[in-house]
Image (cartoon, rainbow, N blue to C red; front, top):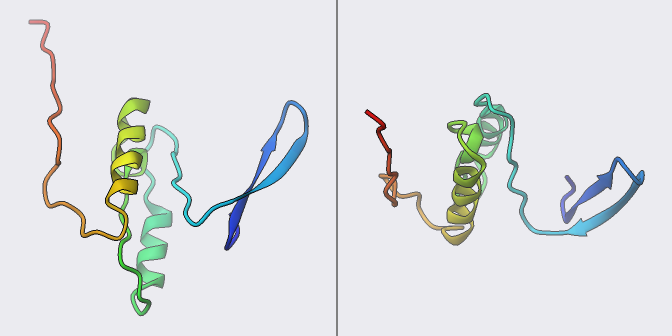
Length: 96
């Protein structure tokens, strides 16, 4: 990850290229790991950062659809204050 983009690589073709972007949303492993968020949070206390939030598997590992939705929601609310409560309903089906 660079200041103005990311370098992506394909392990099958062994090629890489730079993709220009202003932000990167990381989707991680099945274990929650908010270490990057905690480091950024402590490193940006004296900066004019408008929003920083932990989302997806870094917050609570789940199915890929929830991580994608969390990323989509964070992108839609970029530079907005984080909602206090979950802004969507999660339906749980019981087979009992």
